Amino acid sequence: MSVNVFGHSLSKDKTGSRGPPGVGYKLTSDGHFDIENKRICNIANPSEQADAVNLLTLIRTVRENKETLKKELDQEAYNFKKDVTNWLITFKSEVEKKYREEQIQFKKEVSNWLVIFKSEVEKTLNFQPSGNFVKIEEIINKPKLAEHLNEYREELKKDMQKWK
Image (cartoon, rainbow, N blue to C red; front, side):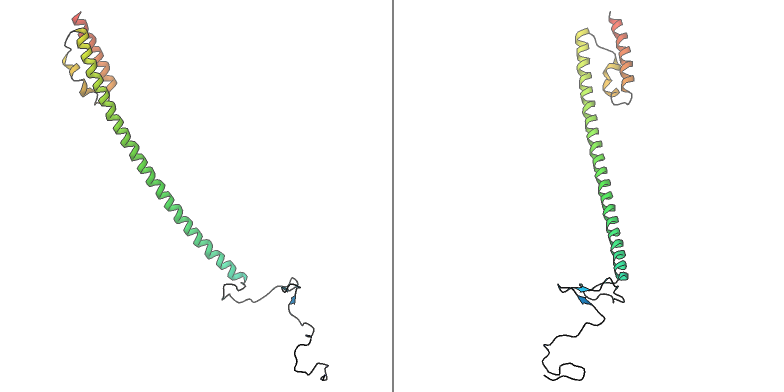
């Protein structure tokens, strides 16, 4: 085997041992780089998805993603608020509709009750009450129903006293 003046092999066979490592990275036993807690400086911006990133690129990407996420969350919150508002409007409308239906039904029941009451009074007392009693159906459509019923009660007492 021939050797040059520096003691290196001159053979074309490159299977020999490598020289000592220079300044650079050491490899661990499992093939990973060990840079002994040194910094890696001047890393270029990544061009491939699996490239390492520098701190500036990382901060910029996090900010962009944060702002995009904030916009998306704001839009979702706006849509949610709009949906809830629409639901409340629909709910209120349905409640008001049901209230009006119940109010109409109540007025019908009171009106029917008053007709029956009028008939029973006529039958029991065997008399025809004054004209105000006949207009009781008009009274129930007015907002002061209790006041009108009290007035009617007084008129009824007067009518009953006449017949005694």
